[in-house]
Amino acid sequence: MTEYYDVNFWRHMFPEVHEIDLKTAWLFGGSKKPFAKTLVNGIDNVITFGRDNVDYSNIESFLKKIEDNPIEFPIPDIIIFNISNNGHVFDVQTQVTSAKIRKLTDIINTTFYFELRLVEWFFHNFKNKRILWLTSFHPYAMNYSEEDNTADDLILYRMTRALEHQVIFQQNILKHNIDKNNFIMGTCVGNNAPGISNYLNKIILENKMIGGVYGLNDNSPTTHIVNSIRIDTKKL
Image (cartoon, helix red, strand yellow):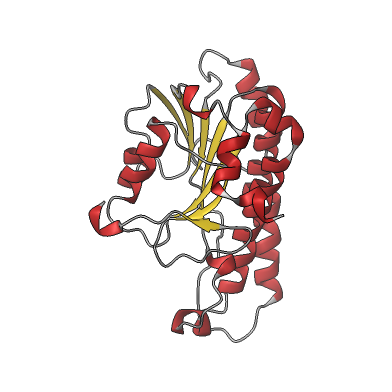
């Protein structure tokens, strides 16, 4: 199964990738912050969504609004998920409480389900579409650190991010998505190095996205299911 997540594999599976003009984007989350503004800089039409204008607990209502107002909400070429989807406050508690598990299930029932349902709707109804999912590599962090040793809620954070990765992997191997030239690129930006947003913006504008989950740090792990894009962050 390794080849499914190899960079060259995805380039082969999506030969039309450099022929798509990404003119319209839907941006979910963080649209008022400099990172997100840089991320979408140069895209002709950017429609922003956030907790101030979207009820993440009601995806069906959102889809109906989109379908009923095609002029106000034109179908995008790319969807960008920049949602703070974890909701867990790292602390030094020694046990995961039932209240924290309820918080996890609340996240699954709201923002995570919203994203999953939107992905399925988007790829089912349209072709030549892209999704950039800003996520985390924490599910694959296997080395000891002081943070990992003291932040009990990190396990919940890892679980929510791992759920996102399963959506990415599953959607990218579905035949109807391969046939339609639809795919998702998940990237970890947790290191938040200066210039990362510019780098991702360039990937979008030059249409160099690749299906899979990738780290953007020279220290990001590489396994049989995830890869790292080796970039010199000092030169960003």
